[in-house]
Every structure is written in structure tokens, then in C-alpha cells.
Image (cartoon, rainbow, N blue to C red; front, top):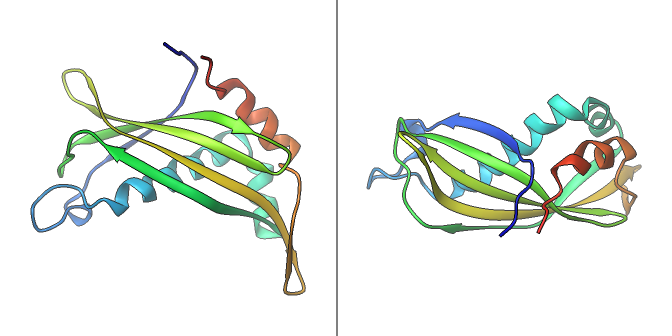
Length: 144
């Protein structure tokens, strides 16, 4: 059993995000990971956002999602993001997806790993995770 503090991002599912069958199209779960990550930066690491407008790049190296139950239009889904791992140049985050109704139902679980790079004059190279991001993520580290 593990427990940790999570960064929580709520999203109301729209018809646009569903397929012909009526459930949420799978690619939207990955899109929501990106939205959660970006909201986290707005709330906790605005300097990193400014650096992204300059020469910093956060490159998605891998992402995945396991599905347990379907979501539909008008469902409220809450992504609970935690820090899985961080080394010198990469960050791995975990995402638990909960349908919020009478109770919270875990409907999916995913991960995403990003690498920090710098780009200039058409070149790109690996750089350390910015200190502001390290400090912002530290309270969200998964505790096992």
C-alpha cells in the first residue's frame, strides 16, 4: 500500500472527446496527462513555463495508460498526478484517473516520462531538470 500527496486536475468530459460508440476515445487520456502537467506548471512552476518560451524543452520520452472502466460525456474525471521518479535529466509522473460521482472510481492509470533539453540554433541537447521544477515536484513524490 502506498500513499502520497497528489496534484489533482479535474476535467468535464465533452461529446467531442467521445467516439461513435459513446465512450471516451483513448487518445484523450494521454491528452489529459499533458493538460494536468501544464496546469501543474502554471500553479507551481511558472518560471519553467517562461523557460519553455525561450530555449528549454520538455520532451515526452514515453507515456502509457491502462484502462479499467469507460468514461462518457458529462463524466467528471479527476487526474491525480504523483512523482514516480526523477533523475538528473528526466521526470516520471504517475496518473490515476478517477470518475467522480457518488464516490471516486479508479477508471485508468498511466505514466509519462519527460526529458529536459535545451534547443538553440537548430541543435538540441540534454540539460538538468530545472531546480524550480524539482522543488515543485518534491512534495508529490510517491511514498511506498
